[in-house]
Structure formats: structure tokens, C-alpha cells
Image 1 (tube, rainbow over the protein chains, first blue to last red):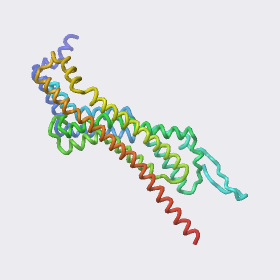
Image 2: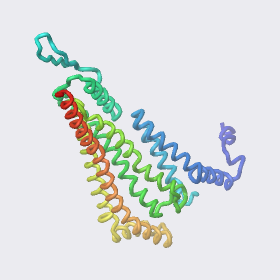
Image 3: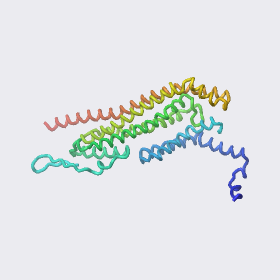
Image 4: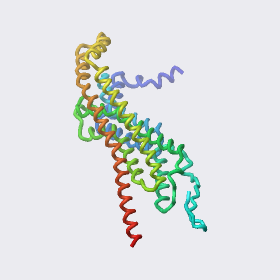
Length: 83
Length: 245
């Protein structure tokens, strides 16, 4: 069991700073630039689709929240010093 | 419901409740679909009295309109200050503090997208303002929409003004920051204070933008209804003239 925990620990394979940098670069890719805009646009479209066409307000709210998160996520992470 | 002439020559109107009227509209699409259904019937000559649209149905249509306008309006009210702050370069968007045209359009779409979509659907429903039954449906539905929109506008206006004039006053902001002052650096303290000071007018701007957009939102179906009503009267006048010849 202990061996399994050790095996799934990413810090066994890469160093701590590298691991943090990996997450930072992932957030930077997803929340900034072209991919951020594409993701946010897609989430907003899905939110309208579910809200108006499918009348599924739970899904509409979820996608709207995701669109907001992607749009304002990067500034929030920058403010927190995580990006 | 259908209208037909009996042998005695009097007009017998037999109210037959169809599925569309019996089902309670759960949302915007269903309400508009029902309006479309009765509009098509009345347009093809069915005689439907406005009295067939019962009090229960009136309340249901009012509720659907109210709920939709109020909920989508509250989303708009929450996002509008953020959208203005992005344009005023107080809040970065997609990690950039100099937003491009796409970014500015996107944040306003985020704020007013639901509102716009809703307005288009309602204007479409209002364009079917023909025939007594359909008119009664639309009047109640649009009545709910207008009440919901004004209710939301009032709440958002008061809340944003309260936030700006009562909660975020200089004294309150300094007092609040002093509580956390021990844990934050002086530069951060000053930066937050400056940011909040610059952000305050955004709340007032947002509240007036909400008033403006709500007025447009309410005016759209009302103008459509008025236009359709005038057009309908003109068509009836022309029809009467042709029949008299």
C-alpha cells in the first residue's frame, strides 16, 4: 500500500519546483491567451445552449460559472501570486 | 378549441382544451411554443375567446416571464460592474490588463448575452400579438417579464448604490484594511486602497447601465406589440374596404 502511495506521488519523478512550474504553465495556457479565450467562448456558448435551448438551468449555470472562471481566473491567480 | 356554425345559424364555440394549454409552461421556450400554437390557430380563422385563457394560466404565464427576466437580469447585474471595470482597465481579463476589442466584447457578452437572447425570444413572442386568445397570453407573459425586469433593476440599483455609498466609503475601506493590515505589506495595503477608490464609481456607472439596458429590454416587446397591433388594425381596415366593394 505504501508502495502504491509512493508510486502515484509525482514528486518522486520530478522536483518540487518543476512540478509547481508544470501547474503554473498549465494554468497560464488554459487561462490566458488564445486557449483561454476559446475555452471561455465555448463555455459561454454551451451556457446559452443549455439555458435557452435545453432549459437545463443547472448545466447553464455550471457552464456560465466556468466561463467566468476562465475569464477572470488568471487575474485572480496573479493577485494570489500563483501565476 | 374550435369554432363552427350550427344548422340554426348561431355560432357555437366549443371550448376544447388542447394539450398546449393544459401543460404548464416550464420555461421560456415552452411558453413561446404555446403562443405560436394558438397564434397559428387564430391566424387560420379559429375563434378563440380571451376568456378561455383562465386565471390559472394567466398566473403561470406571468410567472414564467417574471422568473426568466428576474434570473437572467440578476446575472447581468452581477457581471456588469466587472465588465465596466475591464473596459476601465481596473480588472485584467484573460491575464491581460490591456483588453483587446474581443475581450471587451466578450465581457459584455458575458454580462448581457442572456439578456439579449431573452429579449429576442420575447420580441418574437410579441410579434404574434394577433387574436384575442394569443393577445391575452402575450399580455400576461410580457407583463411578467416587465415586472421581473423592473424588480431586478430596482434591487440591483439599490444594492450597487448601497455598496458604493455606504459599504465602500473611505472610512469603511480603511477600517477594513486595517483589520488585515498586520498580515499584508504596506505596498499591497496602498494598492488595494487605491484600487477600491477607483472601483467605487464603476458601481454607480454599472447601476445606470443596468437602468438603461432594462429600459431597452422592456421597450423591445412593447414596441413590437404596438407595431403589430397597428399593422393588424390597418389590415382589418383594408379587408373591410375590400369586402364592402
